[in-house]
Image (cartoon, rainbow, N blue to C red; front, side, top):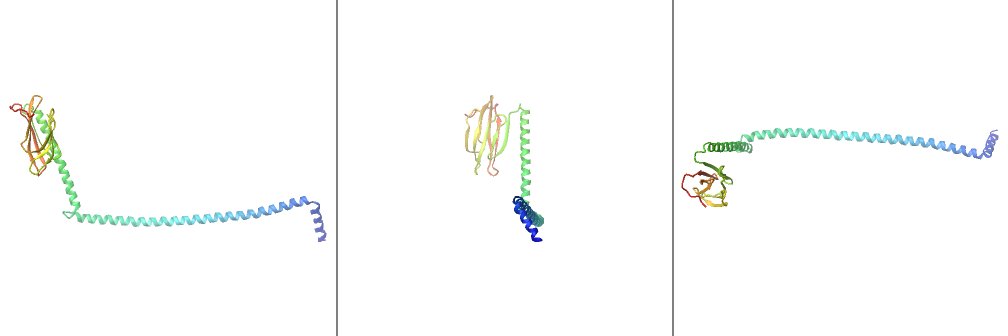
Length: 235
């Protein structure tokens, strides 16, 4: 009986070859799709699983690195605090020594302050002298100033200028003299007491190098209105 059924089916396949082929193709395609889908889905799962494990491993590595950096920072901060404490202790020791650098630095700062104060006082005195000269213009004009090597004496009234370039150990000075209306004169090793007489605005003036101090590298210069004296100006 089974044989008769198989024979009938075989006859049916022979009588309907197209339908048989199509059915077989659909069966094979369905089976292939099912197997492929299963395999692909399983591969996706494995891929996602591997990516997740890699991400977790990377996160753990970064966390470990972060902890290491935190530990290093903590150690460095402790070392810095120790260095600060040590430096403070050494500085307190050095400040007790008279010739240590911190003590000398403080002395230099104080001396610089004193120097600035002295300069301010000098400027104030010069201004007061100029005001006094302007106020008592009825008296013969005079102006006097002490200056250092490398600077210039400038008379505020006549603008006569005497620049000091060098001072030698034998108390002589080298520089230049500039009087309005005259050529600039080169001064070589002039001694204290040297004078120059010149005229300006119908008045006669005498410019004098009064002092030359080699020890302090300074000179003192003065100018006086000598219009009432019978002196001929230098040419």
